[in-house]
Image (cartoon, rainbow, N blue to C red; front, side, top):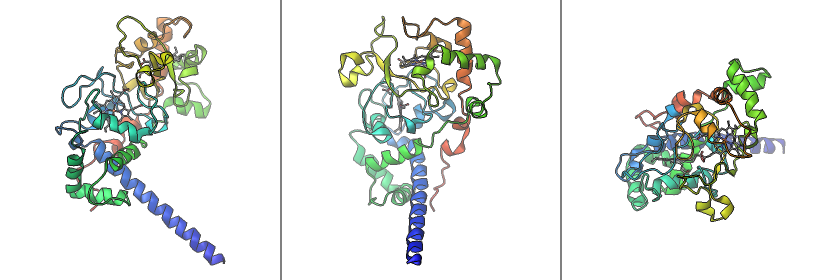
Length: 315
Ligand code: HEC
Ligand code: HEC
């Protein structure tokens, strides 16, 4: 009896160990796919073309054109902690998480980004003919046979994206220790951020409530109707997801269309009646300094998140 339980426990242990090994392989496969230009219509563009590690997986541009030169509509967001949000992108509330989201750049047409919607089969065939990819897919997915599926591709990419965690910043260290931020301006900014109501939408620790709000409504030159474009509900017109602010200091320019060059400008865009109390230029500078304390440098330096070495990780 007792040895029976031990055997079951041992089997469970090895099963868990095996699942763990598969997950590590799947993450490594996802990393290669994230950096794989062969996932675009003309071999010129990978996820990492727009989501650049040293920019916190944003890209430093207002918008980024797709592989065929179609203009981007929205700013490339950073990907810090992207595995922890229910709602993804600036303004969509679609179910399906990271796996479904990855289909947007791969196969979407408004705008065309990587553009493989019509040639999925050919692209999957190309991956299957690469011996390293074939080994990685086989080791990652029990149901792999002969050729990967788009579901396997997006599942591996999502597993990699879930490792893009940012949770060790100056702010985290100070909060855990119960101390002030060492930088005096950032410390004043921390207090202002709470006092002026920023944290009601940008809720710590992820600095978002993962919900949609109308911050500016309709102002001249505003053509992007935000959440309304997917839901068609009048109340959603010009509503956007509260942008998460982890690592925000490295993901500029800001706002859904990249119109704000600096954090102070992005904060000023909240000046709307009844939204946040008036802030002085100094207040905004101090809040921007506080936002700088939310940077986890590991995200931009960890070699495990960088372009993988050419050598195949599975012999
Ligand atoms: C041409 C540039 C471009 C490429 C290539 C690209 N993205 Fe993006 N990505 C964007 C833009 C722009 C958005 C915001 C889209 C929106 O809000 O409508 C975005 C949003 C995202 C988000 C949502 C982030 C959040 O905080 O909600 C994720 C996740 C993401 N991309 C992953 C990927 C993956 C995975 C790939 C490759 C399969 C990829 N992207 C390829 C430009 C790009
Ligand atoms: C009512 C909810 C709400 C409040 C209150 C709020 N924000 Fe925002 N914030 C948003 C939304 C929504 C966006 C995205 C707007 C867009 O891009 O159209 C945003 C965007 C931002 C951005 C740009 C991030 C990026 O990557 O582009 C910064 C910085 C920011 N907020 C800081 C603040 C600060 C500082 C305060 C307090 C003074 C504040 N917010 C108060 C909802 C809010």
